[in-house]
Length: 296
Image (cartoon, rainbow, N blue to C red; front, top):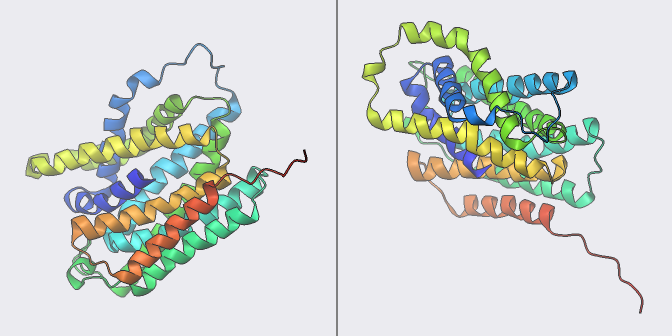
């Protein structure tokens, strides 16, 4: 999730260099090339059942394709810190969806961790000033108030997609390995993005993009399509989805930190308190339960 937050923040300069749908297509294409070897079915895995195929498509549609589109457009219309604020609702969404669809028991401590996560980033939102120059950067000439609200709505939609991605991923790990899940959902994402990507590529001047931007695109593609997905699915295979959802708090924290360290935003004492609350939620969610006291 720290890796996801990093590439969410860094997608802002990439969205200024590439059209959003072209950027998504390039991301999935680079990821597909990097994970060709992961598509092969291991000997110990069963053939894909029809239900697993449907879940793979839904995971790719929600967690890869739509999340990427909503997130990039949302960040381009707002800022990295705003993305961090809005996506603080992901832990609560994951806990709720895992309770409804996976019938997982969500303990009181996990709900308390969710409250700490949301409260911490909400505190960050309350006291986080945006620099005028950054608030004005977008893919349109002027970032009006309506466009800012549209950006926040898109980031909220991206948060719901990310929560659904976690819950569906938990179901998939019961029958598929993390590497194959990563490769298959990325391949679906590439298929979904290809029509618009090819159309935009035909009229785009790739020679106008400098080498640092290409290097950033390579990091973004590998982090978004390969590394973060494999790490997340590996964790989901052994951790309940509702508990894993607490770790999504690291997404907004790292996105905001990248905004501060790389994009020139400011950070004060109140923001440090917000981060402490967010990290406390991870501690609450992961501390082992106290074993019952046994007699002699």
